[in-house]
Amino acid sequence: MALFNEQGERIKGLAKNFEAEQALARIKVGLADNGPGFTPEGEWIVARVCSDYIQYCERGVLKGTTTSGHLLRTMSWLNDLCAYCGALPLSQLKKGHITTWIESHPTWLSTETHRSVLSIVLEPVIDFVCRFLRGVW
Image 1 (cartoon, rainbow, N blue to C red):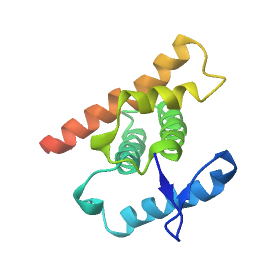
Image 2: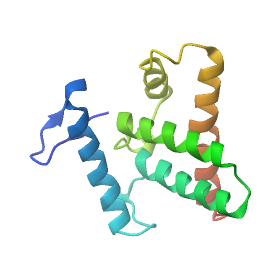
Image 3: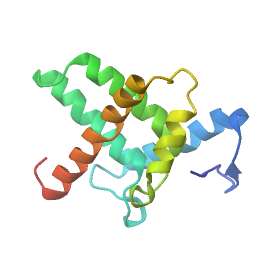
Image 4: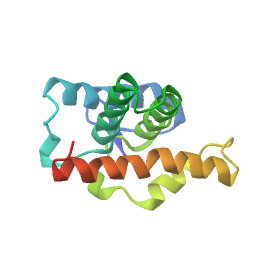
């Protein structure tokens, strides 16, 4: 997923990680400044869904319906996912994006780790979006 700097130039390469994080932060700040119902250019992006789900988990911890361990793993893995493809419109997110992201982590070799990451990244987020769109949230 392409991120762009303030001059509109595409950010490429691992050496530009800080610049990519800044670009993603600008997206997140834009979402926060415009309120929870704001959708940039009429489309949901991965970073917004992840951010909303993290906030949902934080509320769950306060209510006692979610564990703090789940929240910490969720925050870690979803923030990492957002660094990889946070600016991607949700409608364009494909299995290949998630597979490539997981495979880019050399310490995530076991199938157990893959399952854990997928359960945090996909299942709850998809459930959250479905409930949100139905107005259950």
